[in-house]
Image (cartoon, rainbow, N blue to C red):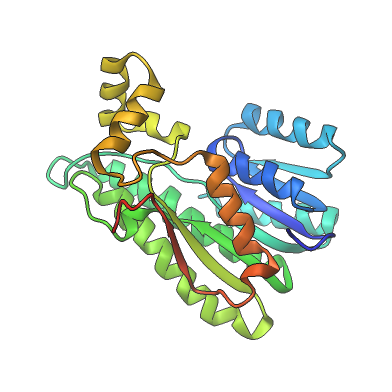
Length: 258
């Protein structure tokens, strides 16, 4: 559980792990949330559901790569909540291609969203964060497990892990903890951006079947995680139960990287 009265920011909050994190943290005692996503309609749906439960919500629909937008978001957070106590840097995109076939445009797009976006999120959060706060960045098991066709995604997520470690060292004196979580396969919409999954889902005729088939290939536990399971671990890392954890890369991949 979070300490009551805490204000948090979550990126990629419109769907998948980000939405699950917003819902979980709201139930865990958050006093207010700042929700960031590029998809304004998805963000509105999450905001309306949380607001209906009485939670104060600030919605910011913008690209996490936009430094100017982050400055405007920072001003809005100060005006509404005064500052932050926790943040979840979750927004990301996926892409699959071998290094030989990868276009530079796709390489830059993935690195820009996943790594530049994480940097700007963490930078903004730290500028707004009160002492003894906490940040979790959603990386991936791809940061530590190499697979053909994942060069841009894997490199971006490995960068996020190292960014987290540096941030943790820089703000430890303020009692702020910064950790990364490294999920393996999770049943989220991001897979729809991956050609391999698109083909598998088309052949299977159902995304659930496709997820099960992929999990059977390389995950020892034989299943992919639900977004809510990852959100529960994010809530743990933000809580006092993880008070001695900082600079950590917590792997939760069903044994995929073992």
